[in-house]
Length: 568
Ligand code: ADP
Ligand code: MG
Image 1 (cartoon, rainbow, N blue to C red):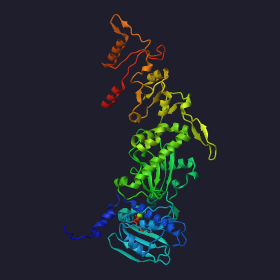
Image 2 (cartoon, helix red, strand yellow; image 1 turned 90 degrees about the vertical axis):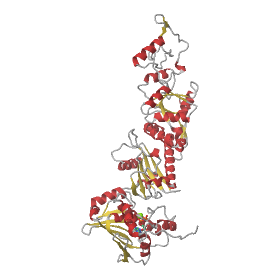
Image 3 (cartoon, rainbow, N blue to C red; image 1 turned 45 degrees about the vertical axis):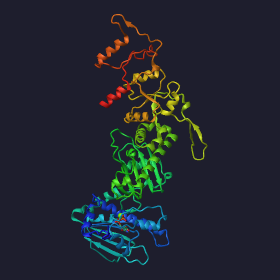
Image 4 (cartoon, helix red, strand yellow; image 1 turned 180 degrees about the vertical axis):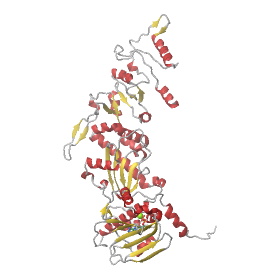
């Protein structure tokens, strides 16, 4: 075949421009985040340049000033950042979807550890969602630069002229559309600042007053923070909620930049675990309320903040899940969560046990969903047990250091919670009981309704694990798959041979009916419960002269119960 022509596709600006203006974001207020984040970038860039010999002037106190003019219907956002020359305006503003971020980072990388929020060169145009005219008044940091003024009324035509401006930086002036006048109200602006800019490193001023106030706790060093600092921050982010159980301070700068604080909240069976609760920031600018695309599914119930300039923001949500950096971030977060849990298990066993009811749900949910996480935490899954915890020689000792530099000490961590219940890992359980019953686990799912059965096991010195949380039915199946050599028996499913008193088991036949006592009891129960073919076994139990032991009991074999549960 012959090639007729090769070339570049043309875009007709008049037709595409309205689409860019209208369809970039669904929410109009996003323009505010975009313009403020450009101002933050401009200030970050100036800081980066100031570390080179290209710039010898004063950086000054970074500041963003918002001015509202109800008469002229203008909203202005002013920064004392890097500014733009006429050439830069032509390059980065007049060319839609052309960002300076990449070139800039390439040139100045390594000067600071700050990142830049911009990526795609589209954010600026979101201002046309609310403004009928947009102006830029700007002076570059370069010596002898000429200030310029750019005006555009939302058609693809623009005007670029010299400006009188004498201070370094950029002012964006929006003349708002009639239906967007809410952005002239100071209360509305304060609300936007609280949502998007509360934690920004730069002060935002309105009417001479700083309106963003909070410290971005996640940017600080964990050594400088107290438990109370973390708790207070949690209360600020999630007011009127129960205190968190545990938190993790995340910090990394390779292979991506990320700071954050994650909290384990108390879990309720009714929480919607599909909705992420972690707030996403980019260089301290708030981006979104949920980050289900970034966090592994099983960690969605966690709360807190993640701040990373390396998460591409304007990319569609489904594309984000495919992004390599995002996948690495997810792995990183999961790994850190596992490490933190192990640290708590090792160093603060009592707190770990105290929070286990809630932590355990995370951990089990994680094991069901993520193999890597399972491998990390499987040894620190604990179960409440009927064991009194007194013969502790199989509980591994843990080395602790009271303070940095102190000698390591062998201590026996307590395995009891506040109510005096004992906890144990599965490995310890199997080890402890291997002489009585090798590879056999007795468990119960309902302390009250299965009380008699539990007691029966206990009377014979058989240890029973409590598996009674709402996730445990799934978790037991998981354990059975994981430990195919171990048999898991629910206390009311089958009577263990060890409970039977074979020696003294003498069946007496009633001469009147010619049936045994067992058969009579079986018949009686079947009638009373209206269930023919009930799986009843009556046998003599060991210690039957013990008053607490029942004379007979109804058992539902494991497979029968599962069948019923499946049909239910
Ligand atoms: P992005 O932020 O993704 O790069 P934008 O459309 O928001 O894209 O902005 C395009 C470019 O315009 C930026 O990369 C930057 O070079 C320039 N720019 C925008 N706002 C400012 C500002 N306040 N100060 C200096 N340069 C700016
Ligand atoms: Mg931008």
